[in-house]
Image (tube, rainbow, N blue to C red; front, side, top):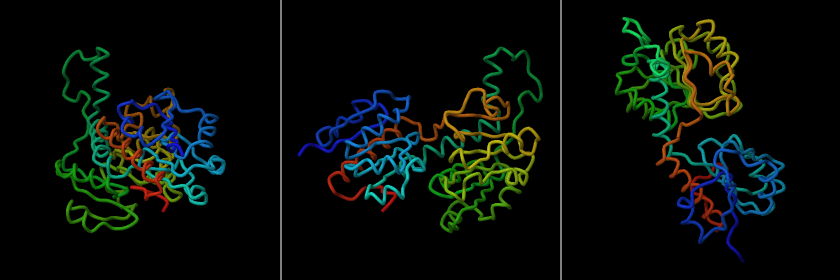
Length: 322
């Protein structure tokens, strides 16, 4: 009996996978940034014991039904809304993700995005590079203070708590809304639990860190943005589809909110001619929340370790559909 077969849907360096080659027969799509074509993905899924996937890969019920040998889908992300979890369970296929290892790094990015948006960092950078800086002026590219402001976090999971921890260093007032209260986080971070409506109405910065579910899809809609302060800044480091982008564009154009910082979008990659990309008060990033070399390396290893365990008929390290 040969080694379990694995198909990796993005190109990884030999250095990252060499430790697993004795245990696994590793096949790999040969492009890092270009998604594997659906035809190839489906063909490989029929032959392998494991899939190593990323958020851009759609693993639906029909693919899983055809993958007769498949034991595990290891998703290189915390989220797994690209995978039909119920169908995987029906076919006794384990799905794993990569929690914990990216929480601090994503919180770094989230707070960086908040700061860049508040202080107009990317706008100011372009101002200098485009040779527009001719003289100093009292209110040249004046932004918004972060310190001593109110931060509202929607979704107080690991990333939300890590983000709140960073905010304490700026003497921010922290409030949050979550499906369940977090007494330990409240005590440790001096955070206050409030309703979603109160958070929207009273926060200077609203950051969403919720997973994408039926309940959170387009949670931030016309009604939500109308409740926010006209001086508020909205930050999304969760999933693009938790925001109704038409409502966000409308709120920005009408001055219902001041600015937005976005790492995720309804459709990714976002087009260069998308209205949000071309707004001076919006900072757009290409979904790089966990994109540090250290963290992405840990994520790869966790995916591979999950594959090794499941294909050896052992328990997954980080299963999402037990």
